[in-house]
Amino acid sequence: MPEHYDVIVIGTGAGGGTLAYCLAPSGKRILILERGSFLPREKENWSAREVYQNERYHTQEQWYDQNNRPFRPQMSYWVGGNTKVYGAALIRFRERDFEAVPHKDGISPEWPLKYADFEPYYTQAEALYDVHGQQGTDPTEPPRISDYPYPPVSHEPRMQQIAEDLQKQGLTPFNLPLGLKLNEVDRTLGACIRCDTCDGFPCLVQGKADAEVNAIGAIRAQTNITLLTNAKVLRLHTNESGREVTSVEAEVEGEIQHFKGDLVVVACGAINSAALLLRSANDQHPKGLANRSDQVGRNFMKHLTTAMVSLNTTPNASVYQKTIAISDFYWGEEGFPYPMGFIQNTGNVLRDMIPAEAPKLLAPFVKLVPGSELERVSHYSTGWWLQTEDLPEPKNRVRVEGDKLYLEYTPNNVAASDRLINRWSAILKAAARAEHVIPFGVYPRNKTPIQVVGHQCGTCRFGEDPIMSVLDLNCRTHDVDNLYVVDGSFFCSSSSVNPTLTIIANALRVGDHLLERMK
Image 1 (cartoon, rainbow, N blue to C red):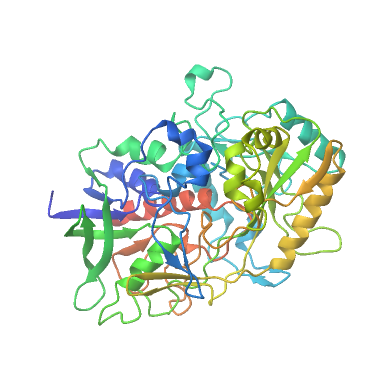
Image 2 (cartoon, rainbow, N blue to C red; image 1 turned 90 degrees about the vertical axis):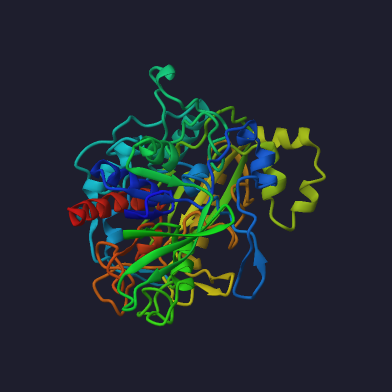
């Protein structure tokens, strides 16, 4: 391997994979380090028992909560990162999300850049990740310079019926923007087959637009790209002044190796990126690398999320169910002038998901129910996913002690989340064919616990003030000249929509900056 690279990118998810894709045409020598391997394409990709009950594709490592209790995080260490098992919902922040917004429990802070700065990159991101959607149907959508690159994913008959029932109640359901390699005019021209194992599952046929398929896969054969898998980065070393990263220390197949590069980009996900910087403390950076502000690891956010199942008298025969979104309560409602959140379908409620995802009090009983009865329940079920913005709080943080990673998190803005849950329950109960609603954690759990970190963000926020932020506006660390962080860490707030598209758009934005810098 060459002794020196122009750029070293650590991580291959939505941030790192996209950034590498953006930089690849430059011809610069780029080393991509990924702690995992390629996710195997095997029949277990489509097994709800393996994916949900056995958590086959999640890491086995242990983290610790604020009470020093160990837990197994829902992290996927593969080429493509967590996008290998994401639900492919790719949604833009609302224009107002970049402003200071009052919430029931506090203020969602203003971003130093605004929606207009991200809009061109949102457009590029949607094209790169095959986003299907329809302009003008989302009542809170931000302005766009062009329509989606692909038409919306259609509702199957039962989902269309549900959407019409919601419209009768005065709501404006719209087709959820999704990153799929789908051609509904000619199915032979797209890899997606609209199966019932998409949300939370790896895609066996590579029909989901993830960071491996759409980014890394497109560049890995180029001669200037070196992809090294099973390479876990342990720490970053600096020169004597502490102003430049001089080597990246990684464990590769059990052996310690050091890699050198002009520019180093950390893209391990908000939690692991913060942990890496903290573990890289040295004499010049005693509190952690680039942590003069003491902000590294702080202001962790992951959304307040709740899964809900509506059991109806009419069977739901839809094969691909994740197509409906509702933003009517995004900014609140009459009598509650605060943001409440965003609602979308989950994937299908499958029989073998239910025992794994039942709330703790019900789990022992659910496991006694015969499989045939669980199958019957699944045929009459529709899953819903509710998410409310959690606010940045310095005490919600990533911390390390030796080899132990602590994730200290106390939910806030709970009143808004509870109101959204109650409001949506009432809507489902009033729908024509809904008999009752069970707040029942099917994907991933009831009110999701600490191990659900798919929407992680905020641990190295960007800004112009080096006392209050870790990164500058180009996501370069204030304290280290050649070190960047390009994942959800840079978020100032979490909004109420999925973070992935904003991570991708920002990676493209930072990519343009790095291309200019490397000239």
